[in-house]
Amino acid sequence: MTAPRTPKPTVNFIDRYCEGYQDLFPEVRSFESFKNLHLGIISDIKRKTLPAIAKVAGLENPQSLDHFLINSPWDIEAFKQRRLSRILEVLAGRSIILIIDETGDPKAGTTTDYVKRQYLSNLGKVDNGIVAVTAYGVISGMTFPLIFEVYKPRERLKPGDEYKSKPQIAAEMIRELQKLGFKFELVLADSLYGESECNFIDILDEFKLQYLVAIRRNHGVLLPLGERVRSNQWRKFNRLFSDGRTEVRYIREIIFGHRRETRYWQITTDDVKLAEGSTWWVMTKIPGVKYPQVGNLFGLRTWVEYGLEQSKNELGWADFRLTHYADIRKWWEMICSAYLLVSLYSEQLNQAPKTKPEIFAEHPGWDHHQGWKNLLNNLRLIIQPLICFNLIKAWLQVFPVPHLAYALSRLVALMNRFANGMPTAPKQPVFQFSAAGSD
Image 1 (cartoon, rainbow, N blue to C red):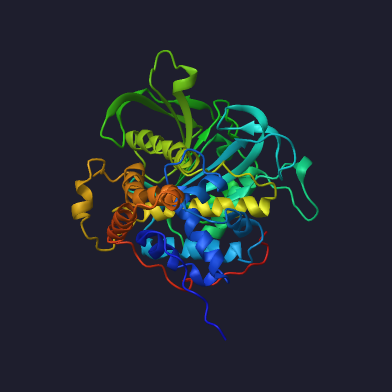
Image 2: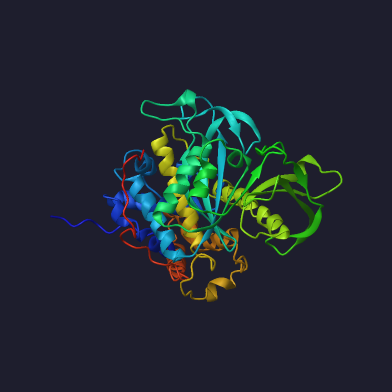
């Protein structure tokens, strides 16, 4: 019996990250496609289409990436659970902030599963597109994706589908993450979830989770006879931003009857004009929370836009040309995995001992900050020689320049010295799961 061949390498830090998933792919070619997708997704090509990724990965058969997403026999649920297991491992029991939101992408026609005219929050209007509910984690300012689920409009349900509202989907996500062992110090969500009539808030209360959710200005609370609604005086506070900037804002508490554990707040940049676009209403369940804390915790909701922006603008969340959700889900899982690959290089998420980048940091484009985009910038510098080599290999066959080919190969080999504390993923999940109910 012939032993399977060794997978072709990409760049060391990508290969090391992907090793933790290798046993999930029954074919060597599938595992190679998995690695090449990560190479292409974190690259700086503008559109992360499969043909574009195939070019930067130097693939002789670009169709291998299509085969990987559509026909290759790997279990997406097993992959998802392995990815979540890895996050739990590096968190090592630490609590995170959980952000719930949805993202919508315009898609033409109706051939793509679950596409219809619906509200797309990214565009701020109703348009033809696909929507997914997402759950992101934040720890010390570093974001990382947890899970997602497509929203299935009633009109586009398939046989066997069950309609679930976005808040219902979010509630199930929280239940799943809690069951897996994630710990949340705070849950943030927008008014769609704060105003939901389903069990979203009930789930937060069931797990005794602290939360801060936006609500509409006409939010209503049932009061016993004789009780009234009142508001405290405006209080000034300094809104502290992640980059150290501050901005004066105002906050007051809205009290329905007598003060309860669930509290209501109004925040604004101008306590006289109360402009529509810069005045917000918030509901909290955070014991002993103080006025300035509410204002700054509410500001953390910007991580919703931040997290989604990275996966969309930098990694190609919406660049798929697939029509079946089973295949789209695989693409989105690849985006989440590539996002995690970058996040694992942060000091906030990964507390494993790190080696200094030393000579790599001498590159004039090296970024010494610890934001997600700063880390992505540096990893793109590391893969740059391999991508350049892949793009010109065909010309080196037409015009052989041995010294150039050797020099580029040598440069690629030098890039493989970069590791910088990438933790090795477990070969087996740290928890058991059931594939029942998976797509």
